[in-house]
Figure 1: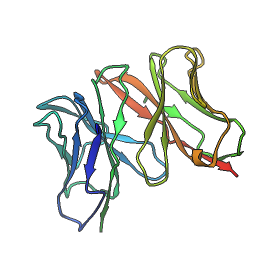
Figure 2: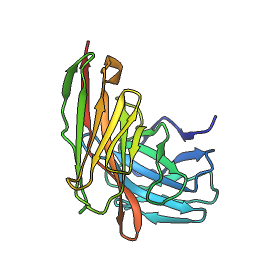
Figure 3: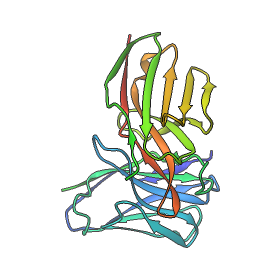
Length: 114
Length: 113
């Protein structure tokens, strides 16, 4: 089955700890994205990558880091510098980063930091 | 700041009725538009994409695009209780040298049995 997997589904961490969220896709998509969703707000772009070994900051990159060493994988690290990390994190991918391409989402990771 | 606006709802319709969901966008140059359905606690699921003015039908769903009015809508015919969800409008817009999706905050639809 082709698709996007994210793990874990739920993640609980203490303040001050870094945490890494996994995102893997077997769709052979070039572009991958990380979004954050908070109640009452639209999805906000954290980081995106249009090709292996290259990634760009989105609108709210502060306190986050990513890597793209393999086409299939785009892990997101939430660092202790992120002021309000509790949120629903969504990974997406598309065939390419161009204008017409549809984005498909993974199941998401719900992160709670106390 | 490029924006996508949706009425947050809830929009309540009786079972079997047509649900009409609307979205306006600010970037006149946008060419690609998408509708996602998101059930509570789940991730968004792509329903429709539309790129040309007019209507595009897929089963019970019809997307309508009017670029002159910067307006895109989603009609759901014969609404079912299982259609109750939040519907997100997304516009692929060229900004800061690349294409990015801008999402609306979503319209919550309630289909009453």
